[in-house]
Image (cartoon, rainbow, N blue to C red; front, side, top):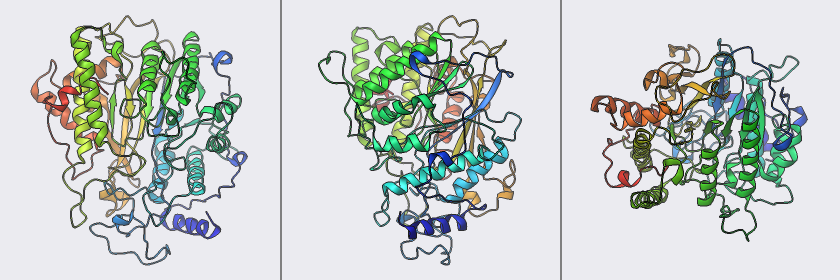
Length: 588
């Protein structure tokens, strides 16, 4: 940005934030970012995962995604202008009177507008003042990308420099919130990931086998304190890296832009029979991933895979998805997968034919054909997640009570998927099904802003509660990193846009409050978040071996959580898997 725009950006931030936030220029050098990892070790054949015993058996970490900071957001601006004031760009100009179709103080949920600086400020303040100071604290932070605003306003067009500026601000905000700056650093690791809106133009990230990409060069410098030193050069080539975050626990930051079919700058992965073709970007990413998983399993290490774009046939190139899913079937030391991008709160099981027990009979061939058809139908109406997703508005600018059709369809798609896997699990509990993928809702108020904390098994003499239903004999000790639950926090900004934060009864003076936990809302029980729990939940929510009332209760809860408890929207329909739903079984 030109100097004038940088001044404007700084003034906007000062006016909007409850605490002053200093904005830096794009010229901020990586050496100025004050954060160092405790573990900086090699990958692949040279990986050396620490083997010492942790003092505590259970820990907690944070997952934050899709902040989409918009320095041009203006309280009182019309939402049809992306919450930008085209007439009066001066931040000191008097605000419009609040009402229908007007941008609120903390954001405009369901409008398609991005996050005002104040929302980001209050989010990191809650992390710093509340989550870090609770007894459980935070061991590390997973940050799955999309920190820059969408390119949704033709009058205020995004530039590459602005994208880089906004990501620099996000780094500074998170490191400051965690106390990772100054002379008394807490040394809480942050593991970042590239989102499709963190590149310019959005979605387009080219690949060069024998040389680096300028975008990856930028993030290699910006994240130099987050990426182990001996992985910097490899990151410059394919954008992925891995951090040994705790003893026997590895976090893999996977560059999903080289697997995403929205990235037209790269091609699909090479099929096994196409050996004469040169490897695509996705091939190099997945070969690297396999090498990491193989070495981690040999060392007895659990692995979290994090990324921006979730791995399913709706998002990935076909062959890239099949290869990825096969890796998830092969390596059972993948104890968690965490993604963002889609803005709705849900989970699914990465599936290929042999991951759901498919053979070569007529029934299985019919299932594959139905899966392909339902995927194509949903993909045809899926929104472009490089653009903001809007809830329909009435003529007066109020939110419609009808949720966008793609969410309704996706809801049924998921229910059919859950039912399919529940049936397969009952039929053959020993069948290998990968651990579910968790897609977290966003900070940007597509619905309501949200962040999530996970609890996990660090390692030690005891282990998580054994499951009554197991897919295969469990080892004497689970892999470190085995998840034991999560807590969803959300911000009811419709309420707080017109009421003071002191009206937050759970955390007075803060924007966020607890939304739900699977332990309570889905009746998993405390300390339970295993594969079998999610498979059985899929059966319970769809009426497999459970009563109609319980299934209906769970569907209502799940639908409410899907849209982050945003009032005024409604996910329609039950569990009748006819038509589309019947064809959608198992296809996510």
